[in-house]
Amino acid sequence: MTTTAIYPGTFDPITKGHIDLVVRASKLFNRVIVAVAINPGKEPTFSLQERVDLAKQTLSELNNVEVCGFKGLLVDVAKQNGAGVILRGLRAVSDFEHEFQLAGMNRKMQPDIETLFLTPAEQFTYISSSLVREIAALGGDVSDFVAPCVEAALKAKLI
Image 1 (cartoon, one colour):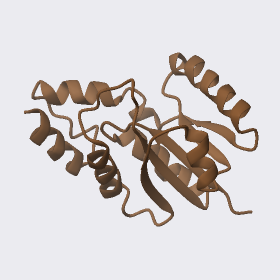
Image 2: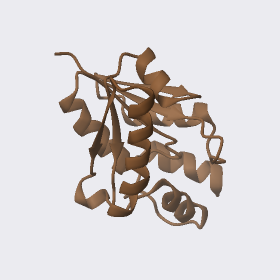
Image 3: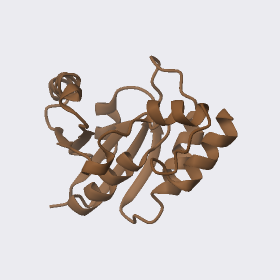
């Protein structure tokens, strides 16, 4: 069976935690789409195109992974791309309630698409894009949290 998974997020910026989930998903699914979202409720540091480009750079060695930007409902993008699975990451128990609610709404709108939760490797559970942005803005070293191209982009944007 050929299965496509879609992994949505704002990825502002993409972190080693995100990359870990994509690498592991690429071993579970024939095709993984990293879907970079325009989120009207957030004001991202990087433009949609910058976030897509950074994700493409960091994931370029994974042959079965694609990156795209999107606006609108995730379930619509998933259906248009033939994704049968929505992949979501859970770092902590505190993430679960919101993710559970999203999964239920997505199932109601598109019953044929399943939501699958993955947890990042232990060394990445504390990493969040917002903390990475904050550390970078204050001149801190973010090299343990993001790929070198993302670190350079953060320095160029925030310092």
